[in-house]
Length: 175
Length: 189
Image (cartoon, each protein chain N blue to C red):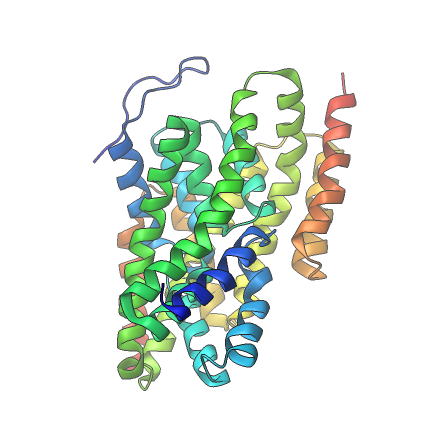
């Protein structure tokens, strides 16, 4: 096997298994290893790839895909993506197997009732964190508020909502 | 469209085809800007298709956040596994990852050309902000379904302040709050 492909696996697979709390927690490690340890990317190149992975739909850990692509083209992208998602997914499915079998039991109800309020706190915390990370302007907050109302009170197709927002922003940009 | 019309009673889970699971997550994946995956999944899986109820989804979402792995991928694994076991989980995750994989590569290829235009940045931030709106909406809906008990609201507020305001890491906060919250729920009645 190509040495770099092997190294990609050795970098991402362990981080995947250790990414408790989601992708954000391992970004610093990915940066440290890919920039300082292996010299695969310059600091600026890493920052660019990170910016792309953040504005893309889907998980931020897709930066692994971009690093793989940067080094070894499409094969590198696929290998890095698999290395990033197979270990954590295997752990997740194994653990939740037991959870899915417990449906309808009394202790399961207690766990669901106890989890719900913490989940609510985390949903709002996550929303605020995204707004902070993109240094939201007044326009961004207005967009968020209108979008929240549209999603909450209508059944409007999300693609139409996103396209409308895009059109408004293009218009606002050139206005 | 692949909407399941069967009446999904609490006891009888509707049999959902793997194709429906895949296409549902493909659609969610492509619009999940600004971390809004869980919000769109909630709408598709709980509200539109009624594949699972609010409580089961919310519990799965919390598990997805705490366990290793990207939250969107874990959410798709959770839903797929609940509906069709391990193969369902695999299909759900493929539906979630494949489009995002393609989009991120296209953006990377276009990036050098597009990053020079200020419009690119401006536009992507706007779309991300709309995605955050979807998350707020889901938060409001899930909050409205919490039992009307003071202790529930106290846990919700502590979780929000700890992670959202004080920026404490999610995992330790959850590992402390969740057992306490479950204990309180279990001791009632």
